[in-house]
Amino acid sequence: LRRGDGPVAKRRKHGDGSVRLRKDGRWEGRVVIGHDENGLPKTKNVLAKTKGECIEKLKALKSTITPDTPVKLKADMPFGEWLDYWYETYCKPNVRPGTQSNYEGYIRWYLRPKLGSIPLNKLTVSDIQQMCTWMMTEARIDQKNGNGGLSDSQVRNCYSLCERILEKAVSVNLIARNPAKGCKLPPIRRNEMRILSREDMQKVLIQAKEENYYELFLLEFATGLRLGELMALQWDDVNLTTGELRINKQANLAGSKLVISEPKTKAAVRTLILPPSVRKVLAEYKTMVNSKWLFPSPKKEDLPIRPSVVSLRLRKILNHAGCEPVRFHDLRHTFATNALAHGMDIKTLSTILGHVSSATTLNTYSHVTDEMRQRAAVKIDQGIAKAEVQEDTAAAQPERTMTTFQARKRWSREVS
Image 1 (tube, rainbow, N blue to C red):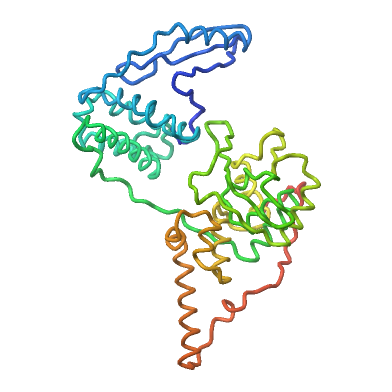
Image 2: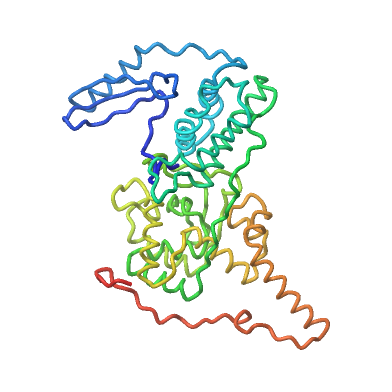
């Protein structure tokens, strides 16, 4: 979630309070006790010489604060009150920390300021459309290069949250219809999929070995795991004898904290079989790792490497190897494309990728399956009609020559 051009800072969970070290050397504890008529938080604070003392004072302060009176649900209650009630009652107990952080941001920065004071039963499509238009054009605080709007995906995500909140108001008979229905939103634009060539994959692995990331990228090329899944792997998840790799958790950021949680869907919990060559590499690698994590953080032994660190490392490796920039997720696309090109069926690939259904896999990789159908048609024509058709030699027999690329040394200051 972003406010301005940079990531939003870590936010306090509602009612939990926060503790920080001031410039004068004292510790300050602060807790939100409510919101004013403009939706801005009202706070109380305490000061102490030590962090421990500050935490105790903050606890004492919270115990003296009169709890809010129970919300009386009624059709003309301010939308801001319904926001709080929905979040605390229906949302917060059922979502992961990272999702909580995102929702709190959308509510605090966009929904409450623009819609919070309007009575629930007076909200209109026009009100919500105006909020969406404001988000698309002006909501970004640091308006660099004249672009004052949020990204299309952020606008859609915030609108989707608003629609869900109002749909719940409909289901509990507070309002007759959902006023969020019918808003005009920015179109869904999928990020362009970029696939690494065989030569570029070799270059990445050669350079990754020089930068001590070889095993990580080799495992990604062999499995197509999501970045969060890859970072959450522990040695208990790997059977180096049978090659079984169990995927049952993922690493995500909640604010600035790395959190290990269950996958979003049941389909994401799965078991893969590693190729013998990858097992051999991992077995040797394990002798050099003194951690329960496959890819432990160099700074915190009890945690894996942060996903953002790996994404940054990939950019550097691609640059050092002279390859075009791609996202880490494009390595997953590369795996899937290669699997289909080598004859893996859609159902098997869907299971390996952890997709909820094969339809998701088909839609994502329709360009590959179209090429496969064309090749199948050529083979049928050759086999049945005896036509003299020559397949593309490069497609039928991919080049297997190893690249002559040599890794750029870690201490090199060359600009590539």
